[in-house]
Length: 379
Image (cartoon, rainbow, N blue to C red; front, side, top):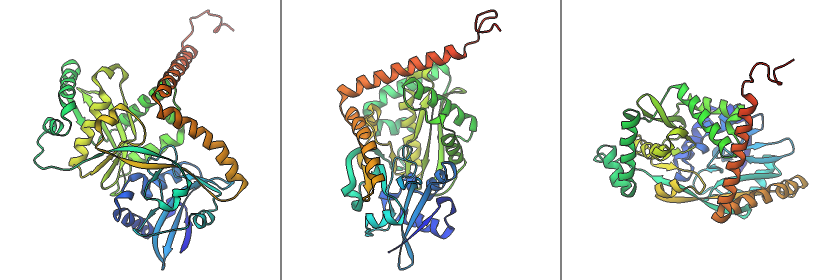
């Protein structure tokens, strides 16, 4: 087997088409986070470390391994922290030697947290397996309008959900859902909402990082067969209520960034968004809505089944690999322990929200205009 290393944004048209064909050959690799367009976007916006190892057999490309690499040879799945699906995209039946792959990529270690379960050569390096809820979709020509689909698909949610939609329409104006919204101002609003949510709940604000903002804007303008950035919005009258942005491939739609107007939280806008999105995606040819790894009540309500994804570190014998694993593994282990136990997760969540509220109040006080003559405005 021969292995060539390329920058993802510089792949030839021939190699990109071969990558797309490989995605078609297995449902395990149909996820948009495994598409060459996602790797190329990260390569354009997140420094110079993005690479793709292309595996050849008899001069034919048979596998594609996207990753990021530091100068010290520390590797990570492409877009780690943003990607909900990771792995080596390959033709059915292909096997590879992980140590040979790491040497070819000049990696001492490779970190992943959403590895496709099918990746058997990586199995000895997996430190934990986790559920990733999904919704199986189908396009039934006789499904009728949205209320009919909702009653047939989620009978336990239909009555309450439709009641909240009617109340929303009565209070704010007729409710409408736009599956593919092309207004960039709606995307900016989603990012503002999401930033405020991150700060309010004590989480890292992804949209405080310029490269992530640029990446999302780039994907918003991407309209390809195997990768399209879709912005969906729920409106009440002319007022945006909730929004979601995520990528879709030919058959898989990945739930990515969802946010809503916090003043309207009593209408359950996030749930309304996901239900409307699932119904519309099915009509659009999507066969799987990937909700992503993580325990959330709404995911339990909506999922039809769960995929399994792996977390871990593939390593070669090297001091840098040892140091990286010793540094990162305890952090991941502590986080996973907290997330797996409600008695720990709930107090931790309250602590983060308290910290977020304190940070928000401190920021508000810092930017509040001072009255003329106050000590802070005197010179």
